[in-house]
Figure 1 (cartoon, rainbow, N blue to C red):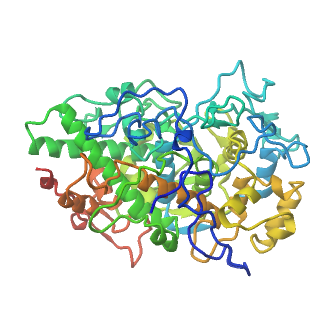
Figure 2: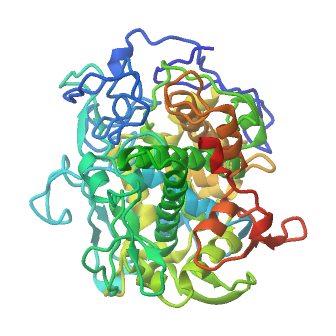
Length: 603
């Protein structure tokens, strides 16, 4: 069935909005509608050379994925919207409250409604960490140029600073009255009307294509290659262990890693995943080089990249996705990888990131972060710990002793925090604190960034996703816990003003669901688009790059547990399911018992 490219794509299934809801709202908007002019999604001012439909490999910059619309998903192209933007002038000025007053400050909201409580989930921390890893694959904002610190620049088109209340329990002791936020670079919307609403520009490719590993532009991609045997560049220590190349030094660290995406050093677990994927690429490249001595460096590199990205997609959809989306949703929208056969590509589906998915919907996983990161022994027992924010942009610990393996085992063993309104205090005032006793506030930035991006308030999104109308706070009674409704009454003057990020934390969830209905709507839609609108999806048939059925069988064997075994330093035992802590149902087994890829299928 053809899928629409219009602004509200929302038919999923008839299901209850919340556990307590007496009504059964339905995801209503019909995906089968056609957009009148698909070119309205093409991005102005981007220039792409003619696409070669016979070329076997993904472009580095995301161009030519869709042969009819070669700029869709390309580096530097615009995001798309599911909902009409919320700007005070209808174009780009920051939103205001329904009564015309200023919206409540983002920092004030955070301190009023979010707390830090330990509520472990049944899944491992890798779920939240994998979410961040793929988030760095599909989106990064490009900041506008400023003439100074945004707390001192009075220009709402460029700066959107967050005011800090005078009585702020944390920041007051440091005389901090403002958190600087620079607005994101924009372009005009689809029809290139300079008087129309603006839309933000993506600083990386939009698709799930491993750009955080390989880069989003040719210069970066080339700089990360060894240019021999198809391998990625690594730095080999005297003991034989390989790490990412280093350039200069990070804060409090002798090494500062270089990868396909600049945020590689942001936290230790993220750096671990980057390192694992580069090691995986070189394992694949070496295997292919041994099988095909006639292949040159470029062929080995591209073939290895195709296999690694295919495996990355398989792990994401077959293992990560079932831990965040409900089984009903996955089955109804055919999001699980096939056990046999191929998937059909639909060129009418835009492989473009939805702005409200990038922020705030996918930022909900910040609730799952642990403020104290466990390092675990080879027996999967905790041995030590580090503070999350103390090692941001300070990755040198990975090369010390056995910490690389201990961090891997920690992220697949330590529980994730439940996705709720409780957030570690490590990210609310201490983020990127460096040598200072304070840093910035991630949750406040998430709220402010969504405003910068024109993401509408909760009622607009709720209606778009479910057809349920909310006109005042009392209408939330069947959708939210009563105590949460009272909290927002004290902060917002109108229900229309409620920020989507706030609502995402408060909406009732159906039993057994990790995401609220509105979050599942937005997040699920994005994963649907990625799978159906990607011409290089690993299960697609009939393309020059398509894997053979035998090769697909090998990729489908792969699990994150296998990747851990293959890309760690000395790990020889691992849980069968790397996405959950050890248990009677998830035993620790030797790596030899975890299925591995047979590369002879690429002969």
